Amino acid sequence: MSRADVVMYRCAVAGVQATAADTARTFARHSHDTFGVGLVLRGAQRSASGRGPVQARAGDIITVNPGEVHDGSPFDDRGRAWRMLYLEPALVYDVASELGATMPSSVELEQPVLQDAAFAVRFERGFSAATSGVAASNRLACDEALFMLIAEFVRRHTTVRLRGSSQGQASADTANACIRRAKARIDDDPCQPLTLESLAADAGLSRFQLLRGFARDTGLPPHAYLIQRRIALARRLIEQGLPLAEAAAGAGFADQSHMTRAFSRAFGITPAQYAGAVR
Image: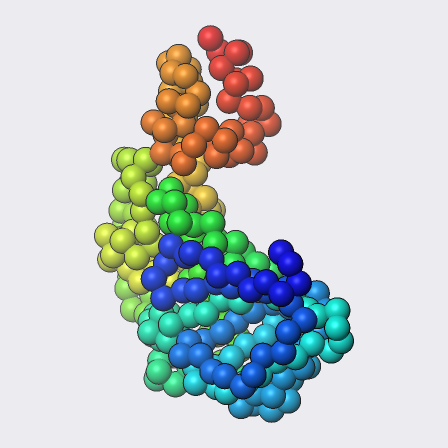
């Protein structure tokens, strides 16, 4: 990326835009209709925002509220680099509602700059998922990462008041049955493309309830569990003698290299090595 570049990525999830920049330019005062959350990767910048003067350095989280007028300039001619996710307010309000917000539309990011290493890791996962999740096979992973990112900043870095999730309103038996239904949907057809919203709706749960309950009952979030079921299916197809590319497609992987990475992480050998051992 050249020093003046600002790049916009295509995202799989409606209402999300992702950009990356490495630039020494100064940006005039402007605003966005979205929430903005980003991570400074290199250098430093100063800006004036609706929440006061801002100085942000490498490793800092930067935020902006919808309609907030702000500008931006580097500390020096070496410029700075950052990544940003811009989130439509309705997307954020929906997550806040699921978390038990008394007034979801009152969500406002409190600080323009945050020093939060754990959240920075969460942001990197969300950004990576948003910019690599266009393929249908990656959609569930993208949904999970973005939902958890939004949930994290709503809980920890906004002014909204939360009542607590509605999960406690259901009996343990009912909640367990809902999770079993979601698990069975994956078990029955691990090749099918899934979204977090469709899986939660089929289980009769909110997305937050599904993520929390699924991890509690299976030890894995839904996408990680889905990948395990696809690996198991690919293993059976390889044992049956299918060519590796056909095994990858038959197990629901985007391509053979995707299967190879997942298979190697699980078993410590490549699919080709496994095929040579079992055929």
